[in-house]
Image 1: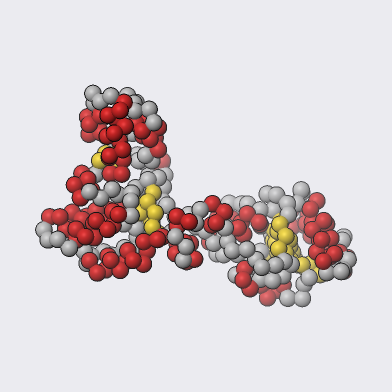
Image 2: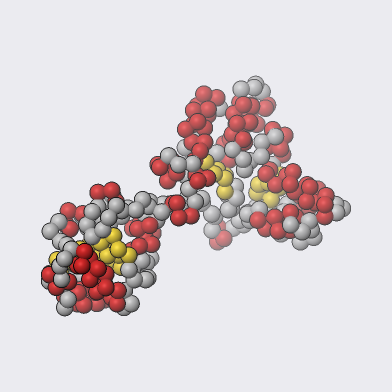
Length: 304
């Protein structure tokens, strides 16, 4: 087990910082069930080198159980249950309140880094039937190459008809003008949403909500069309009625945290982490989405 090779070095580092020897440290192993092969390998090794060792299962662990121990070793490898465990939060509790020197084993560092994040967009399974493809497939053909010769498996017949006879420059121009209005048709192929087009509200820009809500103020067909568009593209939790005050209040609250996805569903979502942290979702990308770092006492070692 390659993680074990790093444990002694990590503990020596902690011991040096505390002016103590490894064989005098009180260690708490928080990891796999005691009867598992992994737990037996780690604990049998540690028992030969540590002054005192106690092992508890990661599931059900309570932070107060670490009281009285010098170092906690969190062992959290990847498994079929990892995603479900992440949804329950960090085994060590809130990072702001955890101050125990900690060695992270297996994939614990990775799991701890993203424990606050969640999958957001819903992508339909290919086993559930036809699934609309993201516009990236058309980007490479229509935008980059200006070539509409091999898009019949992605685009609807109405799009094929609109591009028929156009040269590469005309194809690129058409695509630039209509890309923001593309959505899945009944057969999951992409077509132009004519209602959104007539409203002048590209469905993938935040201005979509501004224009649709403004149209709600009018009477008759335009207001009904705007509400249908909002019902089709707005995320879960949006107002269910064509009430302008309700929609304006909702947009004011969520504007900075909205993002559009064309990964199969072509709808808007609210980024829950961005909203929780009060950071616009456009600024919360990549490493910025990692959980807030502990103030002190964490050491990451080992691999998966």
